[in-house]
Amino acid sequence: MPLSEALWSILTEAETTPITELFAQDPERVSRLASEVAGIRFDFSKTHLGRSVLDSAARLFAEGGLAEAQDQLFTGQIINRTEGRAAEHAAERGSGAPEAVHLAAERRHRMRSLIDAVEAGAFGDVTGILHIGIGGSALGPALLVDALGRREQRYNVGVLSNIDGQAFDAAVQDLDPGTTLVVLASKTFTTAETLRNAQAALAWLQEGGVEDPYGKLIAVTASPGNALEFGIDETRILPFSESVGGRYSLWSAIGFPAALALGFAAFEELLEGAAEMDRHFRHAEPAANVPFLAALSDLFYSQRLGCETRAVFAYDERLRLLPDYLQQLIMESNGKSVTVDGQPLGRPSSAIVWGGVGTDAQHAVFQLLHQGTRLVPVEFVAVAEGDDDQDPAHHRELLLNAFAQGAALMSGRASEDPARHYPGDRPSMTLLLEQLDPRTLGALLAFYEHRTFAEAVLLGINPFDQFGVELGKSIAHAIDDPDQLAGFDPSTRALVEKAGL
Image (cartoon, rainbow, N blue to C red; front, side, top):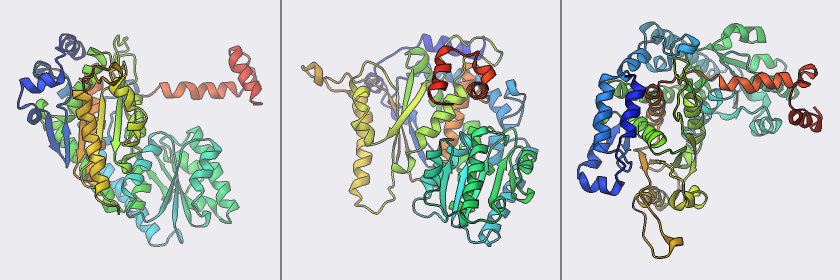
């Protein structure tokens, strides 16, 4: 029986015992379903995962195809079958085929040399970085700089992804064109939005009095030839592997603006934290393997209980961009409807991921989570140690709110007044970082990568392609052609006409 079919049998036959009863039946539940890895406590005990599901899934892990898929991932074999290549983002942090790990290290040295040149004044006085990309090429660096650069950021960083001119204006608002480096991040160096924004950046530099605007450009790409053709000098092109997908790429040269702004030592600590999670995912037993347990929980709720969404709430302002980052990582990876063999999947794949920041979200969406008619698994991400200049009572209250929400979702509260009745038995998991630093952030993001991968393997889908991204772009080009526009539906033609395009 295929791995996904075996898992489907386990999930459809699984019990749905109330969470409070699971605690009553098993005094050791917390110790069995809470683990600490790389400075993060993962608590899955407030989910509906019972002993029978966990035991059956553990056997499946050992006997099925997940262990084999892990080996393929970490040894650089062709695991992205639809595109005929490996998925070697883990090689950027030291886990992979020896030649891929060696090449990643050489390219990281090249990036370090360019950073040294910037710091030594080779580009003149530099006070800011305008990083232009889209998708993972922008979301990753933006998250790193926002999360880790609040206390100490050596350069002012603006991240631009949207082709909307308003986004460009906002990104450069605090930057001086005379002292800003522009980083163009595109895997193929053909991405339409990135190249359009690159031309706008060149014009902005020239209008700002920069005599040689091309001399201010740095390219990060898996297609160096295209960057050369664009006009960027070879010494300012930072390559990365074609087998590193965009949403998995912040570990590569895509992380250049973060390494420059935060310091290269911080970037290396980020990689080491991710490598620690790599080792855990590859070697930990199923019963304590946190990416596997999280993936199992995700599939239990989507396939057994029909949950269509999953909510992530960061109870730390520094992680405010985490839900956005995870939306792309998870939904672009696992938003598929066919198996790796091209057959209809026939069951739910990725849940819709959404979220926000606590405690703001408590006054916006938690009404639905506590008393709405839809069951939504909730994820809390918090940091035990605060890092602000305010009274410690602020951070204490923040954490108390995070923990209280999880307890309230599970336990509920009965009332004779139906409007004040909280049904409870609503699941959550909590990820508690000891502190937010490069190591723990690296481990956290690698956890989400491996969780997404494990879920894909258990479903029998490929998490490394993203053909759905391409359709809308190709149609946008077609609509811009008057001859092709005539073949579109009346609504689309009317909208183009109304907008004056």
